[in-house]
Length: 259
Length: 321
Ligand SMILES: Cc1cc2nc3c(=O)[nH]c(=O)nc-3n(C[C@H](O)[C@H](O)[C@H](O)COP(=O)(O)OP(=O)(O)OC[C@H]3O[C@@H](n4cnc5c(N)ncnc54)[C@H](O)[C@@H]3O)c2cc1C
Ligand SMILES: Nc1ncnc2c1ncn2[C@@H]1O[C@H](COP(=O)(O)O)[C@@H](O)[C@H]1O
Image (cartoon, rainbow over all chains, first blue to last red; front, side, top):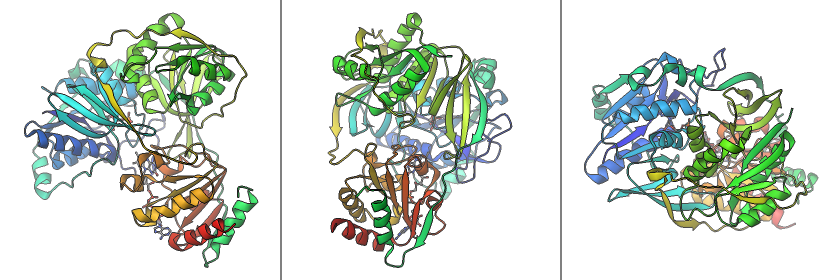
């Protein structure tokens, strides 16, 4: 059972976000493993563990040869990683990212299952995993909250508006995992030490047989024309509860004639 | 200048056309001369009647997919069809199947898809979409520059649904080509969680609880308040992830977008990802023990206090009316 997990390395969401002058997202500080992807890593480790054989390989596309997020996932227990880092990818859109990631996934031999998050924390397009499946011409199941593998088939509980659908699909396949569905393990000290020497195969766009002119910002087929502040919502009255604040709420609702 | 043709992804839940579809149809009518829908699922005639009443003239329908997942099949079908039909713009909702279909289609057509939009306009012959970033504090306008069709995915509640008074749309067959192994995923069973009362994204009043409630049992008072107010209970992701309530309760970026008359946030800090899902509410009441909680910056009435003290008294007062 070999599982590839797509992991995005992103600016810390706890820090306020900022844009470059060309309106692309600033990504030059230290990057961390996207929390959304930590669930996929955990899920993959559990599936390999249950299968009793195989390994977890990470695939990531990030600027400046960034590996800090990868090291976190390697410390959790992934065996190795493929990193695509290329100046030409600055500002790549979702479709371009998917083409690049798909090509990187192809470098990993014998991948039975490819996992990603349903959406990343900084881009949240929620289209990349399904686009990867389309580029690789593989079946896919998105919004998984539970995954099981048996006899070459992946069984998934797929989140829906009103509950979930039980889905099945022969391997190889792409599955996207919703956040919060497993408890990502904390890397152990031993894991952190081991991660330092785990192999990270760093490649450029050209190594993947792709044309850098097509997958970067220049080829993204979109142009930001304006960035402006959204109209702000004014704060209203703030009161301290003195034991009677509930009457204020009732009055407020009364005033709106909703009672 | 108006666009000549727009296609809108029609989705249905339990045979009823989804609100997001009707919202997009209202906007599409404003922007395009001809508006058509495409759809994968059963009951095409009933769907055609509703989308027709909201301005679509044709429903391109694949019919029931018999357990096949929508994205891969509908994406391939639309890719084949647009060759001849060539809409300028194809609109999708931010739903599971909407995103899947847009993603598959974008690869087939080799066109970018722009997601998370909350607005759209036509400027000369350019299509420009609006996206909120950084928790809705900034709005980015992006122009499609790759030639048509433009693929755009919209957040629910971005537009207001409105009937146009049109007759039923005519149903046209949309052929699904053979997608080979890529189409092998199947739905084998469906599980629907029981729910009573108004739906979260339709209720006039939403009462949401967060981690500040302390533990799962304490959520009951949120349900009781929602019931007393004839509203719907909601939640922050923190307590959905913790397993206190199902995902269908979640309000926010990765949950539902709500715009009720009144939104009550109890024990919710007001993370940007929560706020993008409820900021559009007409009135916001927040109860939080931390006077610095970000939620107060958007609340019309903020109560600095303990939910365990304020909520029981509020419930009692409402129930005794
Ligand atoms: C990619 C991504 C997507 C996300 N999507 C969503 C989403 O869709 N929806 C969402 O909600 N979140 C989402 N989040 C999570 C979000 O960032 C926050 O973590 C979450 O909203 C916090 O939930 P909370 O306010 O309940 O908990 P906390 O942030 O822990 O806040 C609890 C609040 O309760 C208050 N409190 C504690 N005790 C009491 C008491 N006794 N009485 C009154 N107040 C009390 C505290 O002062 C605090 O303000 C997302 C995060 C990421 C990274
Ligand atoms: N640059 C990237 N590197 C690795 N994985 C990515 C990248 N971009 C997207 N993904 C994967 O696709 C998921 C969804 O991303 P998005 O479509 O941007 O919301 C992410 O959580 C990752 O699993």
